[in-house]
Length: 493
Image (cartoon, rainbow, N blue to C red; front, side):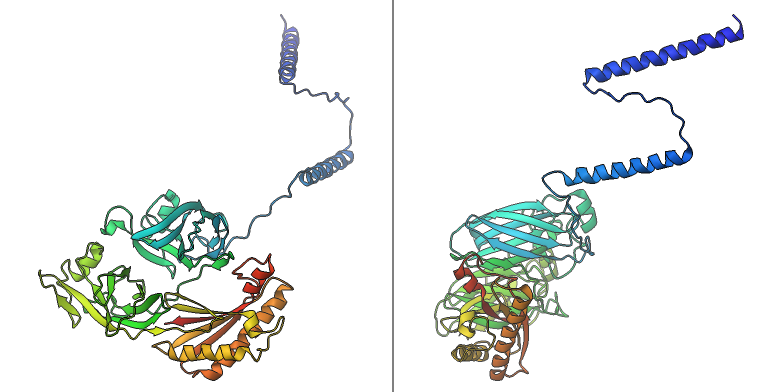
């Protein structure tokens, strides 16, 4: 066989193989019911300019089809949600609002936590050591830092605490643990508290940092929206953690149901203190907060010549190991005039007596009073102060404000406090108009109270919030009336 004949044979074999392959591929397509019915086009010579025009037409047609396909369907394309600039910062932010419904408590939260962080929502009724109701769940933080939590509503009609926590005493993704630390040791800022893990006692490996926001409320028939706020911390004592312990109580108030004690100490964060009243035993306990402050709540009972006793016992089983190491497991490192030796052992502890001198906070019948730690709120309905859609005080409102002014002057042991006056409206009308109206109303109340108080002792701030923070549904006239209000918030420092 010569070279020409060999070349022809090889070409024949190649063409035959390609043809068989095409037939096999077509058969496979038919088995899958995917049939290309496009007719073959004859080979036509096309000049370069024509090719370019055809390519441009093809691209435009393809883009048109893509736009058309995107416009077809039940939903529009979703735009990327705006992210915070500080996502992942160690200085953590957590906020949002809580909506109470008949069946649920719903939390719409926002944060700068890393996406994938696990957030825990909790409802507590009663003391943590004697819970009447507890419910919790966890959710994942989204790409923009937001989170959404649903909790069953207990409908018990008792004071309710709602907490949102980001902590490491539970399940967290490994990437989250690497970023913030296995015990949250990298967390910073005003939302950070230390806490003891559920299992393992008070040893150092069981003490965690957590970010937390808390809201408390008394349930009512009219369901409300409430907001989580940043804590108002004191400056940290320079001698915090010193073995020469001091404990001061700044305020003792009562509302006829409870005594509320708020104070400060140089005890280290997490140290447990106890309070008793009269001859009764321990009636409340709490841990020292990050700034040395503490808040205690004791059932009200009228007793003359009775005092509150506050005690710090390093040997008590609730104390963390680090607290016992700092002050001695038997209190042997404690010094100062508050140290008391135990009668039956070689232990010693801190004890201080606080004279009762409790002042009842009296407010007019048409004003609602709430006390939450160092924050006292007087809620004044809008119709008590103003005519509808007006911001000048009614003449009849001045008697109410005079009574509030007398309470501010006489009901607090310490005169150095801040007052923030918030104006609120319902959702009727233009948003900007409502903001302006609520600010003018808050300013009117401030001006009237300033005339009654020594401005050198009190700092006033006003803020108009419009319809942004309703406490009732705006779907009913009754709810709208409740949302039209002025709140006088006293921050006891």
